[in-house]
Length: 520
Image 1 (spheres, rainbow, N blue to C red):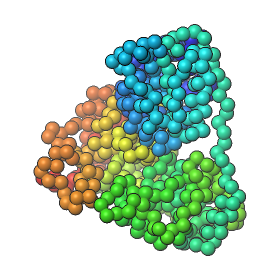
Image 2 (cartoon, rainbow, N blue to C red):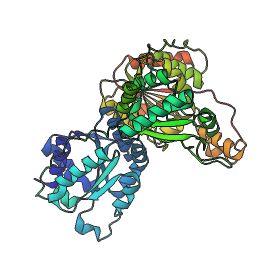
Image 3 (cartoon, helix red, strand yellow):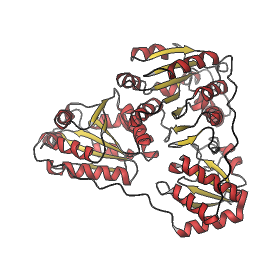
Image 4 (cartoon, rainbow, N blue to C red):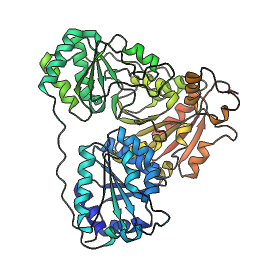
């Protein structure tokens, strides 16, 4: 068989059955092979940044790799920002990137680039297939790498490798189980928890934030007095009524220093020791006090849930009573701000929903108030490269079609990858998107104030304003085939959410937010 078909058969045999694609000429043999193989499902996406973000969301919800199909170096470069986010999320993504035919590369045609160099910053593994016979084995190696290294693996496919005969599918071994906790680490952590009590903080990330992991952590907290917290940005977190509440380490450095100030021992459970998102004049880069002892119970990718449960057994931690019921907030009224928008969502969120959060300046209120929502899963932007919210929701809906997906995005972030709406419409995905329209890059206004000590002036302000002309997200959504409304009050938002969640398919709500007067 041809190399292209060997690639697709190897993907499908390993359970990689969904491919997010924006192909070009160099990938036509792979496109043709989709008809010949009849196995892997291709989902057309209109921009490569949506391709990579959707693959991240799919992997987070499906628990297995997604594949991408990208066109040469420029296509991979367009995908780079959300591949960065996928790498930070440790999402197994297999990038299939077309390359010129091997003899054509030396001619330096216009689209010729060093694809391996483009791939390395965003990939945990990179390889170019050298012969058609290697098409199957190298694809298998890419899948293994994406699983084992927990992040994007990039496989570069010369066009003649894909269109030539001589390919053979390869078998991919079953994924290895996560590394189990070491007895020494368990004993050391147990000793610290006994001694430090409330001066110990268990910081959870990764799979430790599943319902099972949080329940085990709550047992440890009840038995030892230790505090619990989550990282500020998380891959997937079980939240809502009936689940223990975990505060997040604050985003702002000074607030994070205060939050962590009295911690004697910081126990990392599939998490990293906190660092500030940016450097600021005269401030330390980490909010963790120098005197704090940092102890790793489970590194990212290790079996954090099992480590927590083993600690519970060793410390004989009883199962605590169910957390006290949290009353949902009253349905708010009046103009929309961060708090009223978040409270409205908390009242309307259906049980079992998936919330993709790129709300930026609204996210703190959203996180706090959604603790009173029906049980749901919360997915964050992991790498800080904005423009992933809508693609993440697209992939999440395809990764688990049984779940209703809600995406909450800032307007500036949404403009990076609004093309995701077209794919949502074409695939008829159950996604409700709420755009927090404050008509500015509000986070930059706040950062300018932190760094420069004053609000932006009249020449700086145009770099932070999305006004003049105003952007109509409802009109843009309709242009992509998604029904949409614009709301300006909590009552109208509640009505729109109720209507959207009662129907099939995508829906967009443009929420006009109350904002302070413009600078400048």
